[in-house]
Length: 192
Image (cartoon, rainbow, N blue to C red):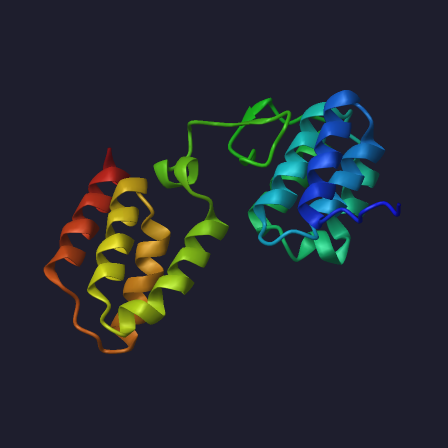
C-alpha cells in the first residue's frame, strides 16, 4: 500500500515534533521554517523562526541566509525581520517568552505584553475574517453584522473592525449605532 502524502499542515506539525525531540538542531528548525512557508499567513513562519531563535546558538550568517530566502522574506513583517537580525548579529537568543512568539510556536511562548487582540486572534485571522465579512456587510446582512461586531468586541479585534469599517465607509454604506459602541469599547480596551 503506497504511503499517503502529508498535507502542508501535517508536514509543519511533524517538523514541530522533530524540533521538540532535538531542540538545538538548526537544520530541523530551518526545515520547519520552510514547511511553514507552505501554510497561509505570516504567523506560522514567524513562530517557526521564533522557536529557532530560542533554541539554537546564534549564527548570524545562517540567519541572514534564511531570512533572505524569498519565501521567508515575503511573509515576515519588516520589524520582525529586523528584530531577528538584530538578535542574531548581537549573538543573543530570543527569550523564551517573547512578543515575537506566535501561537504556532512549540518552544517559545507569546508574551502577555502584546495587545489583547494578538492573544485572542492573529493578524492573519483578523484579515481573513474582515475579508469574509465585508461582502455580507455591504449587502446589509444584519445577522452577519451582529456576529461580526460581537466577535470584534469580544476578542478586542480592532484590526478586523478597522478593515471592515474602512471598506463600508469607502462604499458609502451608513453604519448602525452599534459600530460607534464597538469602536468605543475597542478604544477603551486599547487604553486599559
